[in-house]
Image (cartoon, helix red, strand yellow):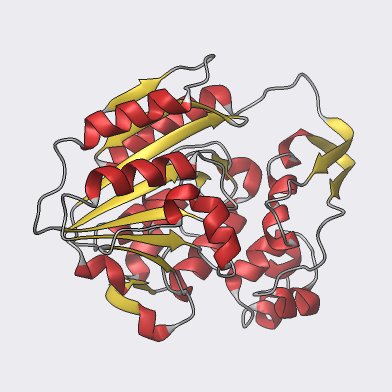
Length: 341
């Protein structure tokens, strides 16, 4: 399962390609239709190299190879952004290769595959939520023989560690899974979620993933800064767990004391405050009580093209502000409330 594991040593692109080609040599049959679920450009990974190898190795062997960009609720990528994200191989795709983008709010793009009952949610959430959750997913996953989830793994504010089946839910899911999973994470709070592997939100995601019938593999990647240090291919949860363990070693920085002032510089790939909120989530645990965290983002010009209307109404607060007035705020999208905490 471990293709390459080199904490402390960047894995060169040539080595990544070589290991991937070796792993894919025995995968893929002539009559199979393959779907690769991949991140958008708000995630850090060597996507051009991976895309190139997948197209070169799988497209000649399978009936169809499609890529689905797991946007979650992010805006669709432009054609220029797609070209930059996927690299030179995107310019001339074989006839059996297609690229799709998820549409989380388009009922036509979604399929209902089951429900998580109130009783299950109460157990999963440790009593925090007792609601039924309709499990909707992009219907493309039901039309392919095999799925490959390409997933970078980092500490994450909603679920603990990103990656794995999070690329199903909320990556290519419908609204209900998005809203309830994010609000559950907010109820538990970022400091108690971020950097913890098996959280209630992860359990919720895995419960929903158990309803997806299509066989799948996970390609989990770990980066330290922009350097690739771990690549794991195998059963989705096993690959993700191995990557999360490595990510905990290389992506979590321990400090001796909290700070009164923290300035977090938003990278250019965050084009809206919705995604730049990660600048706060990642550093909240090291801000002293009564301290200040500044998100420095001179390039950002909007709150969110998707959720901005709601955020202008709701504002930014803390969890207990909403809970104390739940009858007032319950009608708002729960993922928006989660973001604003």
